Image (tube, rainbow, N blue to C red; front, top):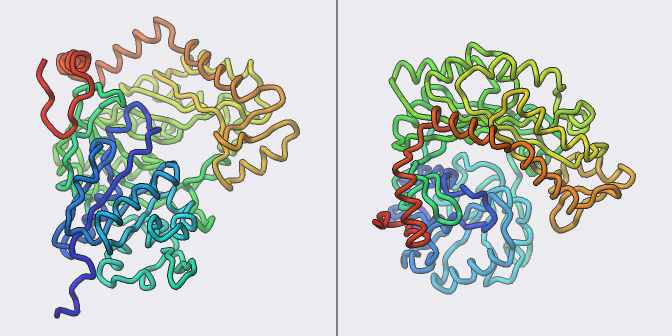
Length: 469
């Protein structure tokens, strides 16, 4: 027997359906699982991917010879649903090893590992993969892997969690395992006819926003910002067939000079796609780079402004001021990009009247769309302590939304709807629609075709060809 043979011969990667995603959650492929799959490409003879957002009969898709199942739990999902899936898998595949990773798995690792044997996971990974899944595959034992939790001999155990290291240039995600069509597909099944993909070119964040739970690891340590080389990013973009690519970085523009270098590489290689990014308003302080970005295809930009009021920005620890926000947008609002911003409402000390000023402010600085989020305290972030210390403020135990003696959860939700109605005037709708059409160039005949098909036949089969009308 080859002592170097891996402990597993067949792995099935499963991305669950959280059931609560955005209307366009099916435009994002399971990038993390594809990276993990790439790391064992040369070690496991058979690899398979199930995406439950598309594959409703997932149990029938499980290969019979699977001896390892790997889940990615990025978003909130009822633990009972996870236990149901694991129970089904263990009944169908006796002796299988079930592992999980992702933010939600990290937070709930003890519950996932100490459940009754028939429904518990065997191993939970904390933090990014960075080759640790490969170590498990080769050794067969979680005790040889850093940053994992497991249940052994009747007790919960964990190995030391390493600090996040630099994001690696290799491997690139293994997109060959895909069977679904990722694109702008609404949850109700309407396909807008635009194929999409995603890429991660950096990770980590150097800022300390009070509401954020993504800038620290499970040990509470700040995740250092690191970035892949522009050449590595370009290598991956060359492999992507979809015309629309979203950068899933927390801060795509954190290092302006690196973005400048990436644009130069894209121009040199002749890579032409349309890109979406998320970043802070510091992007507006380097307008010459922003103009170059627009020339290579960066069109859809989401900012985390969160508020227009200095006292709220200070409460959220954004490190911004209203004047700086206005200056940044004044520098770049002429650039042909579609600008969106997130706003958080319901902060301590923020009044109803101040919240309702958002639409006018958003139009004034040149935003094309807005996203409104009631303030939530999801975990042990610094914000929770600040909210609970404020007289008359509370956290709803179910939704985690912040409310007060003055404004209930229902009041804040109504205000959010009012803000959206006030922003989306007929004039704003026309202006944003025309700009969206001009910059992103959606295929209008394709959208019309899919809409007619959707209206006549309902949700299409995501695995097969689009049914003809």
